[in-house]
Amino acid sequence: KFYTGKQSIDNKNDHIIQMLEELKNNYTILKDKGRIIGYQKAISAIRSFPEKITSIEQLKGVNQIGKQTLQKIKEILETGSLSRVEAMDEHERLGQLKLFLNIWGVGTEAAEKLVRKGYKTIEMIKANPPDFFNENQKIGLALYDELLEKIPREEVKEISEKITKVAESLANGRQLTAITCGSYRRGRPLCGDIDILMTFEDGGAHTGLLSILVEELKKIGLVTHTLVITDEEIKKKHENSTFEGIAKLENGLHRRIDIKIYPRKTYAWALLYFTGSAMFNRSMRLFAKTKGFRLSDEGIFPAIRYKTETFTCAPIADCYTEEEIFEFFGMAYKAPEERDM
Ligand code: DCP
Ligand code: MG
Ligand code: MN
Image (tube, rainbow, N blue to C red; front, side, top):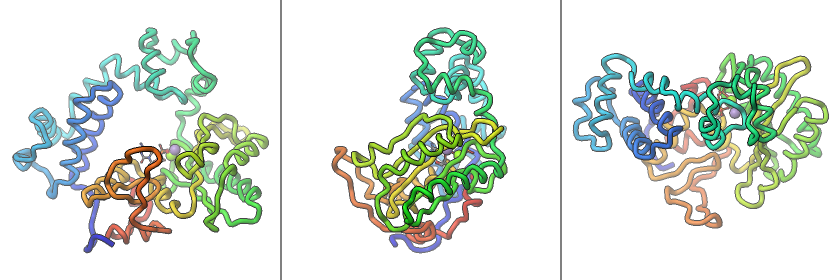
């Protein structure tokens, strides 16, 4: 333990942070490096600001926050919203990029290419698909509307249980733990996708299991497509495996699914990360950073940069449950539902 006294990471200024995040996100899509850094600095400063901000007078002397950002914060305080965000969303190029990034398999590069080629709507792409689209992007396009539908939690549960059963049948008698994370674990009634995290309780290796599992799930028709699978890379870099793809119940809609397998020693950190929310994770990472640590899905490390791929710092603490992680941070435990920020 490195910190005493129960700490809270609830931020009194969440509404300001959220709006500035949205602005930063827009500039990220537009690759405006200067503004991305500027807003990130301001967001970090506000996250660690000790009081509730009711007037920008309080922020005088906080030098990470520039004049322009101060004006934006003033507007948020006075009107509750930010005209710049609204104006930007109407900005044609940004609107189109955001739209195209919603196509499963389409990243910034392909989205930019689509804009350059003059596509304006999803319908335009469907009517006349670009020749540079790969197989995944073609599937993403075909399933565009289906994959944007939210998934009722009962269905998330049903798919998760089926997958867990198949995984257990492939575990050769070893004890396998599988937990459905993400918005489902935080108690949301509707989920964007299905996030399943697995580990072997005996602490042994899981190399190859994910590929075999996905094969088997395809055989029984529960998994229909693979976008990414990193099981082979396991020995090269990280010890976890990831699958991103599409699942479907009989007579159901196609659903986005992520499956991850971690070694038992990093599992609790992965559970914390994969449960989210993304916003909660950001606060948690920043909290760790202010103490001189780097928090990731694999553990807690000294906050020094990796110099090379082969050089990795040893983690500072071993935690085998989420409770132990909160304890390590000197924080009161937060149930997943309380992390839905
Ligand atoms: N995550 C994160 N930062 C990101 C993306 C994800 O910290 N940029 C973490 C927190 C998320 C978890 O991974 O809760 C799962 O990612 P999802 O995109 O599946 O997000 P959720 O499950 O929270 O929401 P949704 O219902 O949209 O799937
Ligand atoms: Mg999810
Ligand atoms: Mn997910």
